[in-house]
Length: 385
Image (tube, rainbow, N blue to C red; front, top):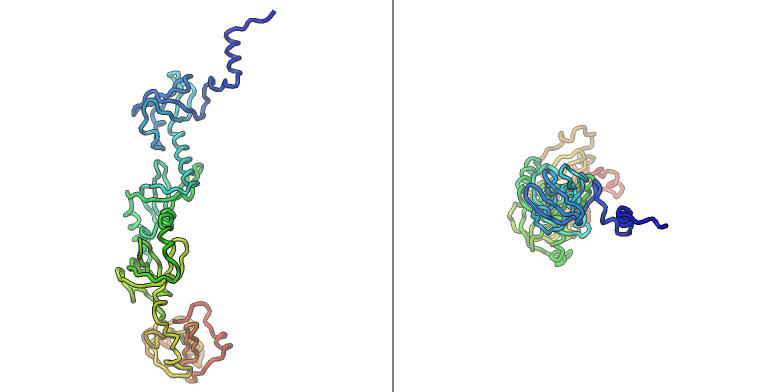
């Protein structure tokens, strides 16, 4: 005799079918999808598949994704189950956890898509800017600022750099996500990368050898920055400012000055310029002015442990190596000369291609063989130009 099927057996059979999952109540920590029944500033009621009702309230309504801040009946939302049955017999849900993950997932997608997004500057420290992307906090390092916002401060004064960075608080910058890790709560963005993206077409208009006209925007110990074209900026390194040796770029240039320069290299968004390449190279004709063995008068520009840098004229500087300063052993080079002294030297070597000229204070000034030049060469610093 066949056993009759009871209502309980029928329900169990139904639950055992392929689609039985739609009848199962969600579990704790599960992400569920539902339809908003009602929404207010205090709570949101959500229908979960017609099976049960969930509620989001209190701190669990903390929105990390703006999607949750303007809900209305009929909207479909995702939330995380934090209690399968609360004191009202409803699912206790959280937008906080769901929104947190959704916000980070969105940022990961932005990184993969190489998308430009906007962030707001919240604060600054000496390393960079604290930003927020939606409701996720992140960091914009100084090195990742675009040329316009990079803090170029004379002497590299850290306090002045910080003051400059703090002036950006409250502003919105366009950036790209370069590092995102929800597990470590880590978000790093780059304004420079976004700027490079927008400048690609403009940069492609220029090539090495082009001559530009620009305005000096900043002067540092290592060179000057020049703005030109459509919001482009290039660096003239101190070694490319003039043919002669320069200790301080401020001695030759000032901010706001208009100059011409030649593009000597383009690396990504970095543009390197040269002013001296547009000037006549005085070393090409040096042998018309100076000869080996000639006695010349020069002014000491700088005293180093390995010798004296000497100005012969406005364009030509030379080096009197310590081995050429006296026939006697020298214990203190400052006893020989100091900056500003004018002395008579003998020219002992001329190397136009290397922009080098060797001088001697010895009474027996003489030409040096190639081997002698090598033996007496200073260990590290480049000789004067």
